[in-house]
Image (cartoon, rainbow, N blue to C red; front, side):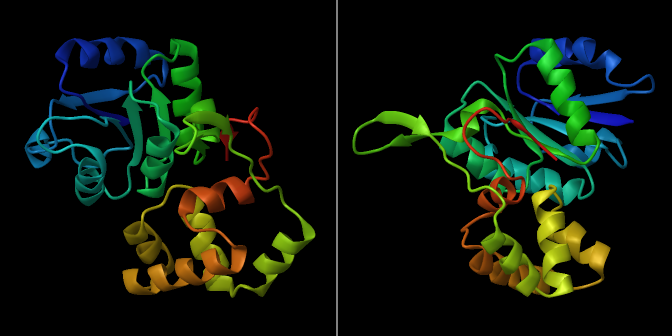
Length: 223
C-alpha cells in the first residue's frame, strides 16, 4: 500500500510515518511539502493521501483538486488544526474521504484511516456542530434519519442516479464515478444534481449524513 503525506512541516511528516507503520505491514511512504511537484515523486498509483489543508501557495480546495487530478483513485484525507464545522463539511463536499483534526490521538487516527481504506468516510464530531453567524453560538447539526419519505425518494431515482449518488457519498470523485459507470463527467453531475434535489439536500455531505441515517451528534463514523 502506498501512502502520500503532503504537509509543509517536515517534522510532522516524519511523525506521521512513524505513527502509521501499524496501518499495514507493506506501507510505502512518500512525502512532500507542497502539491506543486506531485508528478516528480515517482509514486505511481497511490492508495491514500494525507493532506494538510492550509498549505502555502496552493492549499485548501485547490490542493484537494490537484491531488485528485494526479491520483484520481486515491482516498484523500485532510488533516488540519483548523476544525471549523463549515470547513470540514466543505472538505467532504470537495471529494475528500475524511477529515481528521490534528489534535486527534494516534488510536483515532489509525482507526479513521482504516475506515477510509475500507471504503468508508470518516467524520469527526466537530463536523456535526455548526455556528449560528447571528449569535456566534454553536449548536448540534441535526441529521435527518432514514424515513419512509427518504426511501420513497430513493426509489424514485433511476438505477444510474442511485449508483452515482452512492458512489459519491462513499468518496468517489466525479472522474472515478464516470470511469466506474462508463458515463461522462457531465452525466455524473446531472445525476447528482437530480438526486440531491429529490432527496432534499444541497451537497454531497448532506446526502452522506442523510443516507447514513445519522441523528444527533454522537455518531462520527460513516460507511
